[in-house]
Length: 563
Picture (tube, rainbow, N blue to C red):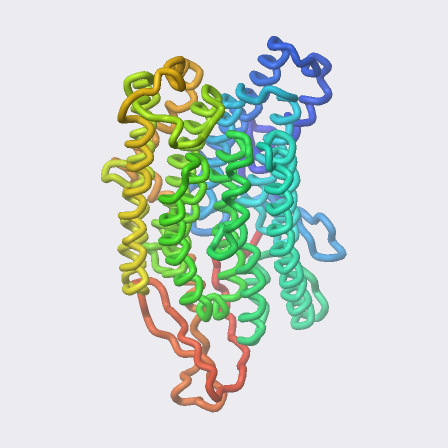
């Protein structure tokens, strides 16, 4: 195994970060002192899990410390044969696209653990599944072998299934089954497409089999029709996970029925995996298929932005309102990436971080309110600002972050997305702007109805303000709202070089060698420069035969070519 860096001089950094939560989860069940249900045992279980998740976060900071933003290929690479007969490798790496998502994952988990005091039954089992889920999420973000990626991708499903199914609300079984069925259907399509690509590579390389993402994206030679069909399968799998309209219907049910920690990890990290899949796998493997479907994906993203905002406005359940706001906000992330220029793609990645912070905090706030009143109906509240002023202040800050007020983190991401997307999809971007207005309407309406007006003493007179423990939980998120909104450059600097190189590499593969004007008999596409760094392949099918796409030789595609 080749390792460029170690933790404490002994353990390979990425492997340590991925599997430390899994080791902690196993120890939760092996240590006898964690088996009780009394308050003292619950406290020990919480502190132990907090220590494991905190140490994982420290390891991720060590990765950041060794990360060089100017290097656009994978760093801290750990690579060794796994299933040699089938070309499967244990292949981990991190680059400018994944580094901040990794940090977001390890950052949110200790916060989720701190908020777990509301779990009244089998806290050990709940935290066990949270740690297992963290292992799966980190593995998904760091895997550079397609088979390993798929293993971690599917592994994410099981702990989330139990978190919602055991610790969820009254309709948890329905929500869990819907979540699983949607995800499995999409994942199976992706698996079929993945095997097709691997066998195509083997047929073109003397029977050699590999699942290395770099080798597949660099060398496999697929026809235009193959790319279109294969991208469609991958796009469905990742679109369900985003979730992209109209595949979003599982999300509100999952959010509403999930426990508070489950909603935070779902909004903060899991939903980002769909967009990460587009970026890391679908676009490099099928660039012309991606170019063909770009207008469709952009249109669906804008529909999701407006539709999600309108449905959120109509909700009477606070948690369901925040859930539909996620559909709207993630539509911006999809639109930004599909526009495929450096400005919008950087904004999309940045907005994924912002959404995890602001929406994660809103779900935590809803959980605090629900723990005290056991209802999420907006009509049950009113005048809370006079009764719980610190809670009202926190709710206001994260509400303003959610609606992208300048000087908050949400503004930077949305501005970059809209500015970059307008270069490629001016009409669709104009419609997307209405989502900004609608977002302000439904969030400020929610705040007005719950925090202002007359306080109902009978219903809410006994409410208590946030506790010191809850303040500690919200403090890191509160700080990041303003740090990322006022001084985003340290975060943007980590991703920008890789994003520029990534767009250049994939764009070159979107453009087929040869001119369709000179060779109309068998040309299938022509390239038009757009968005500064992107080349949008315009595909025409009227009377053209399918021609194989010529791969660009020696294109790094953000991976290490010679290890």
